[in-house]
Length: 174
Image 1 (cartoon, rainbow, N blue to C red):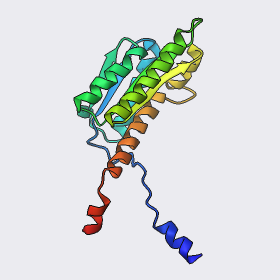
Image 2 (cartoon, rainbow, N blue to C red):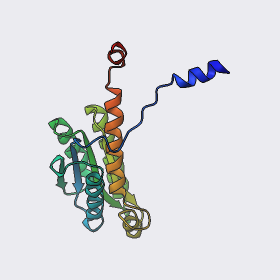
Image 3 (tube, rainbow, N blue to C red):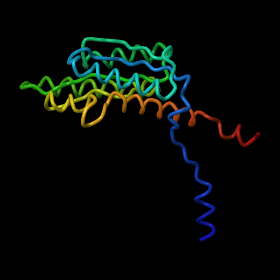
Image 4 (tube, rainbow, N blue to C red):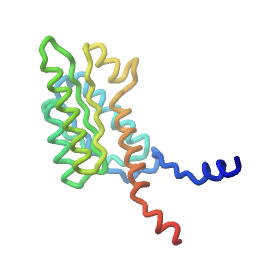
């Protein structure tokens, strides 16, 4: 039993601290389509970042026509090396055509690829809802603000990844 306790104490735990990112540089890429919902997501993301100590000077908002254009824009933002994380915000609301599925799947897949290809957190804050009411609920009413949540995920991921970048052998030598 004593051996198990020692083994548990030896485990390394890594998790993000939301308040250790005051110098974080965040790019927020925004699809303007469905702006009546998306602008609330943008406001929520900016508010969350500022409340967690990120300087306004370190936040850039980049607007594009819609969700389908977000992966390319996120890729350019990641390539620029100007940002520690990119938050993609948009809203795709199901209509009566299969276009919803194409845009939702393509944008999500594209954002994931950018994150992996450029080794930077790219947070998918694109709402994909069946109705306008659901989108409104997720942009700051009953279901919270998914833009703010996406911004918090970005901060946490920056913190986690920065801890993984630490050379533990170097720390042990000190």
